Length: 531
Image (cartoon, rainbow, N blue to C red):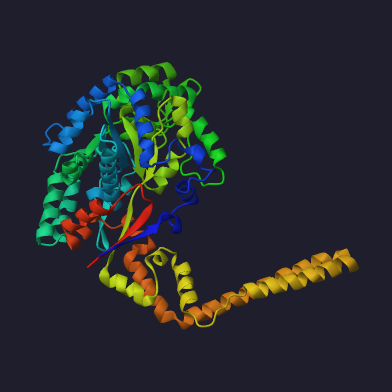
């Protein structure tokens, strides 16, 4: 079945900032370095090559091989690791939380967007090598966001009392209930058995959540050469340490973000910076750091360090530092020979706050690319939409706006009082001229009467529209029911449904089609219809 493509700019789910970014409007241009197009990657490669040393490359490969100890690597993955020694090899990166069993399905769209972009770049620039990377958010501490994944109408959830960086959580006895639920949830079919085996092999007892996620993602994408990076380790933090020390001493992120947010005041800020954008990290603990004069303070415990003592602590234990959401991008771009970051609308929005920060730290700013997005529908649902007279783009509207759109399409009598309002305003304009000539004090009364009459027309218009909606209630209910099928809880399908639902329904063809059709340099929301 064909795939419909809806321009992101037409959809209410995308913010004004993202729509203006895609349109490359003048108000957004100061917030990015190069707009993502194939022709701009040559300059990005040259700039990154000049800022990324051979020594750093060799250390990166050594660290990556350490992280992959015990894994069997595909030819593609092995080739990518070897290629990273060369000054002409670069990465394209996405990052994501350690959601249970990959969490919402858009995780897949992120990864495949990265892989497909590398393939496109390889064809365009054969003298370079491009390596897809998934950066695991192992230092995140918001466990509630990742502890579940949706299966049908229920959530399969891991309950644990562990705290701190989620990547360090251990799959202990508390995880057994999740394993048991997987055995009963997935069907006894070839596809069901595949998913069960994949889950149990990945989430083996005694592993950390980071280790389990690496195993799972490696099994899914190793053949495509995807490299998986865990930033919670000593080598990367050592490379990051000089920048972290500057952050502590100069509060660069806070100052540059404040300046940027003033420039982009017409847009809603995605993340508000703190004066110090670092955490203290150790087993079971991730505490926000603050600074008071020459003291560094762990916010939750109140433990204080003299500034010089804290510097010495970080020099001996660099992995005790953990960047927050506004410093993690800098950390990533310091340790990777990276050209572009692919993320969702919210991610791109906070990256757009960071260009000046990168300039202050003298680190090249990557290109920012909106990931691919997909809505899956059955052929039956597509036929139902046609019968009801709605498009897939219509179904992205809020329920209220959708009902209004449908009524305006099918109603036989139209209640648009625009002409009447215009005529009313013209009549009262004449009265205003008479009032000025007669007694200027009457102007207020004339203007008040104008507003009263206009509001009366608007009220009548709304009442007639409500009556029209009631007249077509059966039709509208059918449209709303279809919307709920495709937008669970009235949210985007990709933000709640797990990939397992689609794999069980469509098998390996589902994955093959994603690789065949997704292209992150084309800003469209794909609607894939399945027989």
